[in-house]
Structure formats: structure tokens, C-alpha cells
Image (cartoon, rainbow, N blue to C red; front, side, top):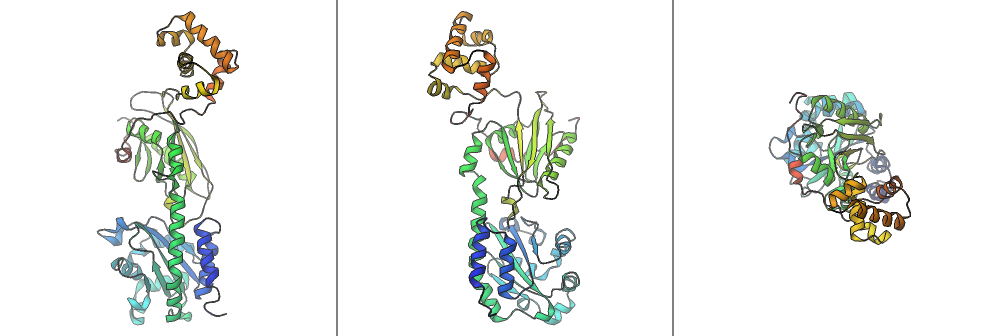
Length: 405
């Protein structure tokens, strides 16, 4: 089979995987077959985090090791193999200038023979040579891909390097496509705008346990600093005991092999009723950038919060007058008819008269039936005004404190 026979399959695989229509594993297999390599490693990273001591930077993702022993992938990240990797050092030293890289650009054969990293790779994976590329250095979130093969297959040939270089712009576009689809939950996205209207606090957690998205209700709760904080490394309860339980639930929810989760209450420093929190896993999705892949969801309810306003719906739906609407909203907030009358400054008999009109117009007969109706309305959509919050303030609060703080 000629070197270029599978080029169109590779390109099609990139775009299908970037759009979520094909597993990335299939796209990698097509690339390996077309380029005559045996395995691939793929990392995403935040280029802004590489300012300074770049060799100590943490990648955005833990890396994808395709057709390579996953144990080596774990050691690469956890045991520091990455810090002695000469090709990684070469990449970090030339981020702005080098797009395609391979062994001969930074090491002679004799240097490779003496390099402990090459010995580790060959011993654990059977591979010797690589051919790598990075996405556009101008993009904030980038990706790097390396193809690997055994010593017997030899260095990448000029023809293979040229083909790889021609394929990389398509990989880059597919990578950006995946990111844009995943960014639907970033501020300004349609999904984010919809979730911001929900009075329940909603967090989307990525595969590393970090908060990929927080709606306005969650940010407002965190900004009060009385029960939990949203920190760069994730959600944390302010009391150590609560935080230990929360981290166990989140850790179980984000791991594909566990798919756990659960519920708990978070004590509040103000003495108000506890927040109720539910942690649940989301369907697993493979992607290059783990930070844009939702892995778990956290729902946070504040039992002390007033019921979301429903008045804007009662007029159009049931023809309630402005006064009847105010009575209904007091009842939805938990008041009795006597309490509603007192809050609205009207006589009890007048309030009862308005309640009778509400029953008639809504087709209900008793207050419990009316309450069920009011509580099933899409509360808050289009009218709820959440308190303004500085998003940065919500994620820079102090770390969890001890139970006696």
C-alpha cells in the first residue's frame, strides 16, 4: 500500500472525531496506518501556563496513550519521566518556531543511545523513534501529538515527515472544532445562558475534578463564603469533614471505572440551614482536551432561598390580576393566607377573596393543589434576578478550613 493511499481516511477521521461522530481512537489508528507508525501520544496544554519554569508545567490533560502501554503513560506523568524527555524539552524551548519535530532535530544516534529517557521508552514500550507536531502556538489551549515506532522501523523519512506535516492542519482544525463544541458551557454560550437562569446552583466538573462551569446561582452561593468555595482545583466545602466527603463523591463521579456519586449536606458558617448537594456522573465522552469534557455534575440547593418568582407567568397563563399575582407569589414562598394578607397590607377577608379568584382561574380547589401547580411552573426563567457576582471572586476564596473555624 502506498504511503498516501489512506490520506483522505485520516482527514475524514480527524473531522468526524472533532465533531463527536467518531471515537478519537479510530482517527489515531487511521493516522498510524497512513504514516507507518505504531503508537501515538497526545497531550493538550495551556500555553499561558508555560511562562516561567516551563519544564514543571502541568498539562491540561493527563495525556492519551494510543497503542502504547498505559502503565508507561502513568509513569510519564506521575513518576517524572516527562521531565527528562528530550523531545518535550525541545518542544518547550521552541514553542513559537517549531511545528514539526523528530529525533534528528535535537539528538544524534549516539546521544540517543546514551540518553536514559530513550532507554526507558524502549524498555517499557518497544519504541525508539518519534515524529511529533504541535497546534498553532497563537492559540491559548494547544495540543501536541507524537507518533512512535520501534528501532527496526528506523527514523521518520522525509516523505513521512512531509505527509505528517500536510495532515497536521486538518488535525488542528478538528481539535479547535472539539474545543468550540465543548465551550458551549463557557460564559456567553447558549447552554451557559440557559443554566444561569436556574435558581439551583449547577457545577460542571471536568475529568480532573476541576470546575469547568458554574452557573450564576452557584457563583453567588460561593461568593457568600459560608458553606463552600470554588477554587482553581475544584469545589471545596469550608469545613474539613464536609470537604473530605465531598471530594470522595466527586472523585468517584469523575472516574469512568467507578461512575459513583451521591448526596450530602454542607454545614454553613452563618448557622443557616445546610446546603444540600448532589453529585452525579455524566456519560463518558472521549476527547483530547479533558478540561472541556463534562465528567460530573454537582447540584447545590439553598433551603433558605425564597421560591423563585412565578408572577410573570400567572398573568399570561391564567389571567391573574396584579394583586392576585402578588398573593399567589406569597403563597408560593410558603406563607399562609393570613401571613400573605399581613405581608401585603390587606385585610384577611380581602386576601381570601383574591384566593378564591386564584382558585377559579387556575382550576384548583385547595391550597396544596395550588402549591403543586405553582411549583411546577418554569420558575425563574425570564424573570429571576440573581445577585450580581464577580466570577473571579467566586473561585479565589480561601481553601477549606478546619471544622472548628
